[in-house]
Amino acid sequence: MIIPLNLGEQSYNILLERDSLNKASSYLNLNRKCLIVTDSGVPSQYANSIKEQAKEGHIVTIPQGEASKNFDSYKMLLAYMVENSFTRTDCVVAVGGGVVGDLSGFVASSYMRGVDFYNIPTTLLSQVDSSIGGKVAIDFNGVKNIIGAFYQPKSVLIDSNTLKTLDKRQVSAGLCEAIKMASTSDKELFELIENSTSLDNDIDTIIEKALLIKKNVVEIDPKEKGLRRVLNFGHTIGHAIESDNNLGGLLHGECVALGMLPMCSEDVRQRLIPVLKKYSLPTNVDCNTDTLISYITHDKKAKGNKITVIYVNEIGSFEMREIEIEEMRNYINGGIL
Image (cartoon, rainbow, N blue to C red; front, side, top):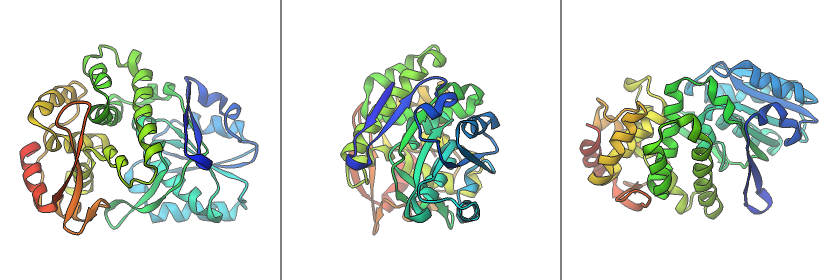
């Protein structure tokens, strides 16, 4: 299945097809020098398959985890490209999850003022969310995604067969992003996830429906000026939890799960909690409210002492609320503490 993302001159296709990774050269222009970026947690055969299909493939493997999304990794990849004489007609291919995609995309956006970038997400989280939309970034000074750009890929290739090598916790963490989008925008998708008896059988439909939600939002608001903020449901508090070193060990999707609960009505919360528990996602956390507030103050969505948050009053719909950052204290205490 091909899902076109229409952004004028920056338009590209999202290919959703099982086993497409092993025939990527049929869809992507790999007939050139390709920097293939992956991480130590991704099965090596995925990057090797791309290398075998490329005219000249160079694999660079970074350590697994959010800690690799930093200036050191960014500089290392740029240095590798310079040392190996990459030109403006060459490309960067991300093979991995959101960390690999964010970092690789930022490298591609800045090397020689921009080279072609292909994203091949291998985790459920990146397949349903971070691989499309063009937001690329690294973390800095303890703040997530604070240095980055909007840089659209040339193509995104999604092969759900790669999910077979993920452990259940990673799958559940990725599923949370689909739950997020369903909560704000698609009641039927929420019900599918809520009632599913076989995630394996339903996963391609879930990925497709989640992608269609994000595609429509990105086409209307490619640079997050308005509607695209809906994709931040659960992320304002979730990013703060993720940035809190005292809460180490939680995956991004698990932090989003916690971040959604304070930002919805009691009726929604009563439906959301059983769904999160069904997929072994957390529903409460022992955290310090003052610490979370300090991270929220540095959130990119904050303006002065106010921040725009996404609130779900009823499954399948949302509202934007501009609130005082100090008001977040009441939301946090009412939802996850």
